[in-house]
Length: 332
Image (cartoon, rainbow, N blue to C red):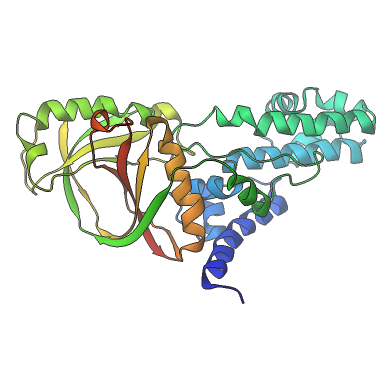
């Protein structure tokens, strides 16, 4: 008998599979991220993280790989088509963009690929896929670090089925955590805005501390220190990512300088408790989004998500952070 948890997991993963199917059916067209989120019926803001947590690649990396795989097959199967025609047919914006991407993935030009015998192409296809979606991919992400996809047998195959990816993912070391779905209150916070990589938000906490510390705001009973993330790192370049270092305050608190007030909406949240090393924030988010959500019966909502910091890591015996990741949710 199939359990409710398994049914929910299948529904969650099925939505992502629908996006995968849609990409395969429309890879030659202009595909907008919002359109793909709508195909999955997921929050547009959180769709990237859900997709990459399940599939193991960002949407853009996955789409690019599928287009290159289709181009590699088309170059051989349609010898009468020019390289430019192939590039346009599979959805690249220009021949030059296609040429760079193809050479980076397969190690040869499209024309060289077309002129090779089958054995030579087979030797290059899997090698290129392993290189492009293996260790290299792991080094390109920040808080949103997710596991890279596994390679298949050739450039014309889909090399990372969700079922296979989940099995592989479970063998990786990941932080343990527990999750409760809670009704959280609306919060008024004083904040210092940070623009740039999420890992450097400490700069904003420093500015906030210089303002809040002398006012005794951290010593107020029940005060929370937290970070709000306003942009998705999968859709926004690192230099433009917006986040806010925050401390909860009473409504109407007077602020000054570059410190402002903001209201964080309340409602239903998945609250995940982690005890992690400084370099495990990305793994924590991926564990919540990729492991817990699929069988939870919930999906991410569009309200603000945030991290609440519950300790001072320099006082922890292992230098770890104890945090709550608070992700807004709605029923699946």
